[in-house]
Structures are given as structure tokens and as C-alpha cells.
Length: 137
Image 1 (cartoon, rainbow, N blue to C red):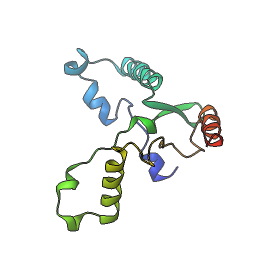
Image 2: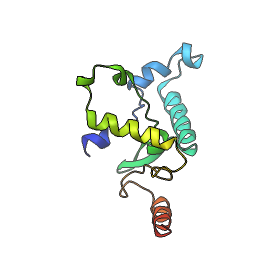
Image 3: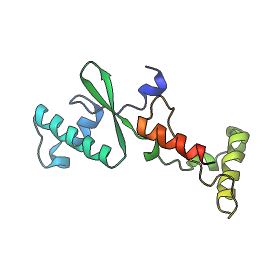
Image 4: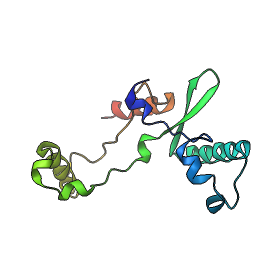
């Protein structure tokens, strides 16, 4: 697995950082035992997957994991937009600003474009839908 893929994994085991934040009386009203916490997180992740925020993945043997769904991520300008010009990559700054400006017009070449994961990571249903959509163009 590549480092890029590794960064998309959601880690929520009983020793993970999220466990230290969530598995507390302040957050849940009680501190569940290990098995209860894992059952809670499995249910939560299944719900988030049903809502399209996470994607269930097979890791190895019978081990199941979760990955952030690409469509669940929203990119927003951060404080970098206000930093000194020399610290920014001018090509990407201008590209993103021009896309944002053009998307506000009625005739943007960017309308209808969607960000999707690599086809090797997409479900068969999504791949077929994408192929059908492309054949209509």
C-alpha cells in the first residue's frame, strides 16, 4: 500500500487517537469497555458509509477497514491565500482562483466535472456509471 493510500485510512481501534477523544465519559456519557467501544465505532462507521462519507475496504484476510470517500471531502481556501505571494505556487494559486471565478459564470467549462477516485478504487457500479456518462458526451 502506498503512503498516499495509507493516509486515506480511518483508524479508530481502541488504541487510536480517535479512541482517546471519543471513548470518554465527557463524549459518550460513559467510558465503554473495549468491545463495546469497537461495536459502537463499527455501527458509527457503517452509518457514515451509508451516508456516503466512508467507504468499506478489505485490508487482508478477513480484516475490514474504512477509507474516506473522495466525494466527502470539501476543499476550502486556508490561511495560505493570505500569506506572502512568494510562499505560494503562483501557477496553482492562479489556476484555483480562475476556476472559482469561472464557475460563477453561466458558461463555465468546469460545470459538470466531478472528482473521482482512480478506477481501481471505484466500485463496479460507479465505474459503469462513469463509463455510461462519458459515452453520452
